[in-house]
Image 1 (tube, rainbow, N blue to C red):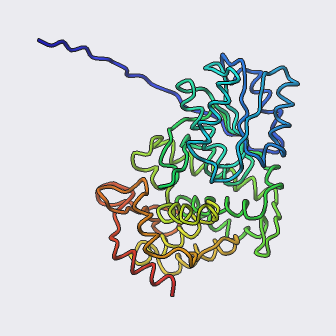
Image 2 (cartoon, rainbow, N blue to C red; image 1 turned 120 degrees about the horizontal axis):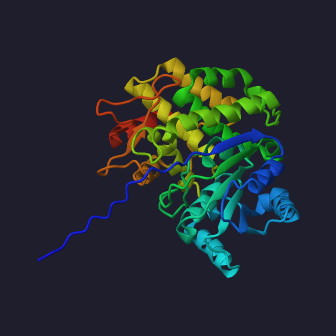
Image 3 (cartoon, helix red, strand yellow; image 1 turned 90 degrees about the vertical axis):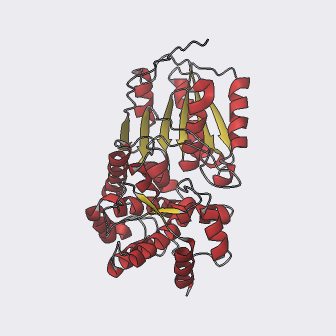
Length: 379
């Protein structure tokens, strides 16, 4: 004798949100809060890192308090090394000790590590509380603050632990780019170039023509406003075009991992001495040369991708301290691995992605093929 009861939970959820691009957007954020962009919130937790805390975090907290909001600041040591489960737990304990509950809102202000970590925290705290992202780096503007993927790193691999949690709104403050160290800005350019490779040949050509209007090969930030606005807007448009069709990364969204199979492995193997974008730049080089070998891009197209990365001042060679064996072993921890086989996504030419016969945007690559390519790259 048994009984059966069906739990019917079908529902339609609207995860839409706005992205605003401009300069000095604190007033815009505060006006949105006054208009009730997040409902039933009595207190705000500003999550940031030790660098951004002094630059922008404290100022945002002061303005929120001046406008009658209950806001407190919580920070963690800057850097990808701090984007861990342990840091998340520490922040959660701090929030709980300050009596934060389900009536709070998380405001993440900073770069990709901050929006990744704070977004994960918001997605699980109280089983999910609303969050806002205020991006202060090109990397966050191009990638991390948009799309709802959140997570932390582990000793095994990057970003394997996390949740999908969409923000209520994203603010991309171009003025904050002026305070970025040159390496941090270039790191964001890697994700920008990746987006152009994925979906927009015209944007790729725009970057080829205008890279020296944002950064010089000598290491000087130029930051032409019109060019920066176009870079920010195109990054959002391209990522939105993918996320809209595949919010939970069932297939298409894998294309956003272009360069990441090798890139994330390099980032972890370097002990995060390589910035995320620096590692992704090298990963893009490995991907495009492998794509050339497999016939998905021409030799000229591969050279253009590598040349643009170099024009942005990004590394394009595998560090000598990381052996081919180390790199291949670490690639086995990538999220796309299925049945013990390393998988890559590939660009097809410049501005489009290769889709395979089974409909997938990723495909297994045999270890022997990778070994031969890595040997060739190092020559």
